[in-house]
Image (cartoon, rainbow, N blue to C red; front, top):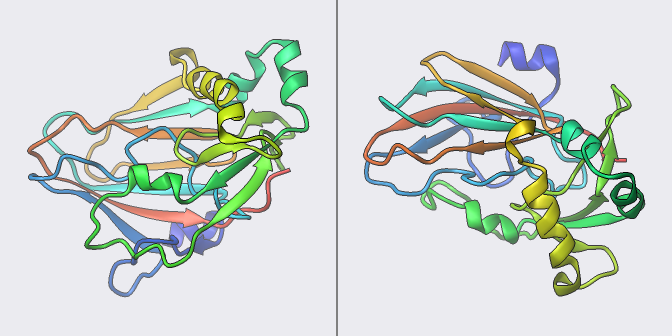
Length: 216
């Protein structure tokens, strides 16, 4: 928590209770008998909020004997690899992001708050990083449902292309966890995917989310 406060402003996660005494620290846990993992899909964290987080920190407490790595994908590289024609097409488009679509990543229902409130936010498909000035793709298969002004059916072909493109192997790296490992990623230009390949084993992480601003 001290490190997180030095890097930004820790905030509470919308749908998961924090650990005792630390509301901004959530436990990300998969038990031996469970088959699904938390957030087990490529995504940018909570893109359905008006001000999505700047970054996230994940600290490994217990790891399985094998598997459980996390993949990261650079959305700078994904954008820069697009053709000039595709860049022009995406310029000015807004994606509609919904917490309802995030149901696909919902696990550990006993610890997750009921969705009493539905979150939806529109953000530029191509966002400009407020510090580096570089452009990055900002849609993700976990949250983006359509483009503003278009139906889901009309949006689907282009979104499906972007979802496949933005996680190509050449844009990615893979993080292998050890107990005590800390990963800190910039949510404004990075997607991540926790690999669910350790059935029958336990994995426990602590996570802190840092406040961000409205994408532009």
